[in-house]
Image (tube, rainbow, N blue to C red; front, top):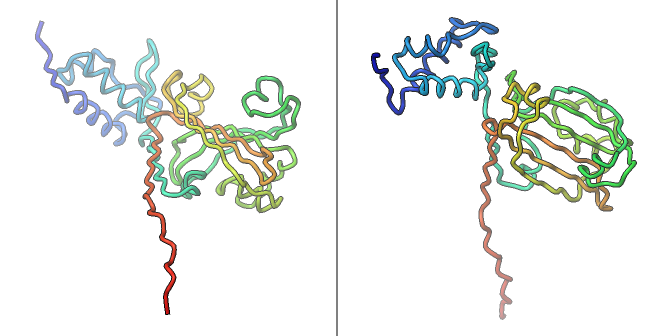
Length: 255
């Protein structure tokens, strides 16, 4: 048997070739790439290199690998990664301005034991749920799915003229005069559920980053909780804070 040619960077060459072929329409959406065996022969590469290349194409959202079916093309443009640079508290609280939301569902819910535990509120409270996908403006690839809960009396935020763009907390402030006096933010590692993976065109069980934001009013009432789940490869937090030296008290001037 003839030994296949494989080098440490070979899979990137394969991935680049296939990516260009997908983007140029050689492999159309809903069609399938050649089998692993055929790709090994075509590129004179090992199966390991071919699988690495296909894994990369899957990670950037161009193909979906189906057991016993093959690698199906699902997009001709790769999924963008959002790098959010944070240099102030306000930037930490909100996503960049060039984001848009696509609403999946809206509904009134009453907290059962499980939801009350998740929201960290009391049992039987009335909340309004908004579930949506968040997209970079001009892109068809979502960077996250968000489950957002607000107290039921604020449900009319869905009627705000900028409901699909500006932060929900800002909409509540505009319509009801309630502002966030304190915000709690948690960032945790997680994995994608079947439903989340389906909505995000990502791999079930894949690594994810979950950002939880809890908003409290000046009377310390929790009025909004948001859970945003990002596939790990699509989102990066970048913090850039500068140390400020303490200012000196002005010295008295003797006349």
